[in-house]
Image (cartoon, each protein chain N blue to C red):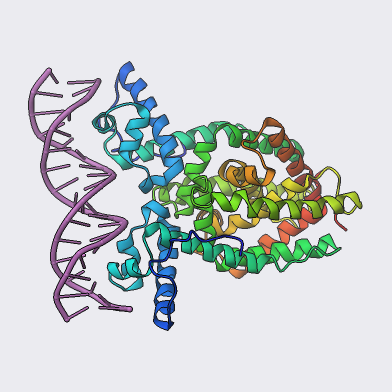
Length: 216
Length: 216
DNA sequence: GTCTATATTGCGATAGAC
DNA sequence: GTCTATCGCAATATAGAC
């Protein structure tokens, strides 16, 4: 697992079917509230109302507000990891980039709440994920950058392209469709983005990045 | 002005030198707190402490917390507008893109707080900027997209590139260096980004986008 | 214009009956 | 395992002396 839970997120160790079901109801409600209002902005009251449970019930399942928040973050990172880390550092940069961009855009379309919670946490300076960014993430990032660097050494990517900044570009451009969909919808004059919009996004992005990096 | 103030942000209409000075002190303090904690998360107490003024003083100058927040947002949009709208829809897409990317990256480096407040507001669905995104922004965006479309019609940009999604790419990739500097610093193993990092970002970005769009 | 003291609300959290 | 009632505190906001 990429992100270790704080040992004290849960009010009680584990549990049976009822616990699992209620915990997942609470987590889903919390995800919505945290995405809309951030950690401090979300209230246990609103989460309880959305979960259709009394407030005390949430405190029975999670130690406190921070514990609930950390649990939501952990779920998100696990999901992220399982979606995007199946990509292997194979030989063909073209295939890797196509797969990555398409999966990430699809992830943005299907899990916008997760992306937004993550983004808000990051913009605030990631106060609750310091260890993750200090340890696991730095390692993960270095591994990826090295693959791009190796490709550049083999002449498969233009030497003008900084591997690090290419990764940032891949991340930001795809993430944008989840985090800033309000802005995108306003720009396109739509109430909600459609499947075709995401496909346009992916194909334009891939055209620019593949050609722009000189990837054959 | 792009963004109309809610008529009731100020506690009192206008004012002299003392008022102007104190208002700007309060606005600067508020910018830091809102960037760190979001609208709900920031407290008038913390803002007052940072401004080195008693809490009641802030309520004397601004009607309430929301009024102060709207005032901060207005300042940000004005700054944005004056920095980026000096760019004219001239004939040469290459020059326009180079100027835009460099200015926006520079803006991210010098005004990270403004970018972050704006980003958090957007991620939350822009509850306090609905009118802006409904009216001014949609118009501004259409104007920009039309310029890119004209260039494409003249063969100056690859036809595979969607003008709309190119603009999103320009926005997101540059914005990223302000909003997600925590992630970038962790990835690069630095405590703070340096001038050289922003230059690397701009040159990699421009290489990929110009070449990727087939702009000569 | 400034600032202390306070009114009032809403929050996270818990006790304790069921 | 569930839920009502409540505690204690921190928040926004204001009254009113200076």
